[in-house]
Amino acid sequence: MQPWRKYGAVVTEAAHFLPERIVTNADVSQLVDTTDEWILERTGIKERRFLDEDKPTSYMAIHAARSLLDKSGIDPLTIDLVIVATVTPDMVFPATACIVQAAIGAENAWAFDLSAACSGFVYSLVTASQFIHSGAHRRVMVIGADKMSSILDMTDRNTCVLFGDGAGGVILDRCENSSIGLVDFLHRADGSDKSSLNVLGGGSLNPASHESVDQGLHFVRQDGRSVFKFAVSKMAEVSVELLDRNGLTGRDLKLFIPHQANLRIIDAAAERMKLPQEKVLVNIDRFANTTAATIPIALSQAFDEKRFQHEDLLLMTGVGAGLTWGSALFRWGENCG
Ligand code: UT7
Image 1 (cartoon, rainbow, N blue to C red):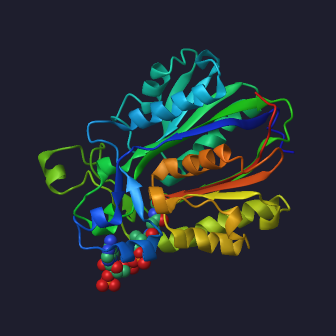
Image 2: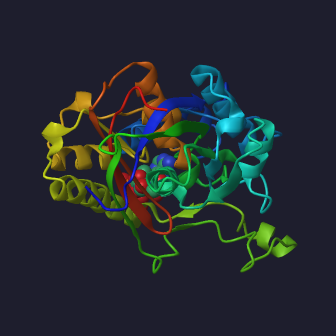
């Protein structure tokens, strides 16, 4: 047992929100030179959801947050902290987490955004857990939300076919039993590669200007091949290392909840852990890559389907821009909070 853990940090509720508008591969192939076959074969994606153009990321995050409150019946005044993982905040500042905090009436909570792209949710979940482990907080809301359609160049087939919009989140509660909840985590970053996946414009390096917009610097750009190689090796490596150091193997897991960027990346990680298909959550076919939202959406779906029980082990692993990657091992707990 790690000395930093006084209390258990337990997920007691999960919820998600997906926009209604379905954009199929056939729809995308009207815009760029691609086909349903290419997208499905190379990525596993069949369709994605796009939010209405006039609605921001907070719209989805607030829906997910309200759903968390409705499902759990908790009083928003009992929330101590709201974290929103996103790379598509409503604006540079204030933080989207503050917008969510106000919308749900979490008046006793402080709030901040966490930027770690596709690793944003696992980074946030582990960050939130520390406040609970230490005894500083009793209850934290963690949301992953991204409106990727707001930063997609719909003329660039290398990126526009890959992403979608969505939000998901959890309530993390203190548990007197410190062996329940977050068991261990392994997070990494390599900031030396800023070029393979980024949005270069709109920050202090390239403030928005006519030129920056003309050059399309406000769009996501990706060197797919190099990110693919990186993700295939790191998703498996960090997952196996975390299991190893806890004396576990894939056999001990109830579910593996990986970031949904490419089915081939997920399959490679599952193979390294010798996981059968039924232990691996996959929804990339319907929602594509929603960046910080993929893991909480999948977790919420599994939660609703009651796919795990008290003391089951869950592994969540993200890989994304930064470059960032990380894995969090949870022992599912009930009767806490
Ligand atoms: O979530 C953050 C982390 N992101 C990821 O993990 C994404 C990682 N990368 C990937 O998932 C894959 O690299 C992609 C799906 C983006 C691309 O798949 P790939 O098998 O690596 O394809 P590729 O980039 O090697 O391109 C193969 C061919 C190229 O044509 P040539 O050069 O062989 O003639 C591309 O121009 O496919 C072409 N291509 C397309 N063709 C049809 C690229 N995009 C498309 C497209 N439709 N949308």
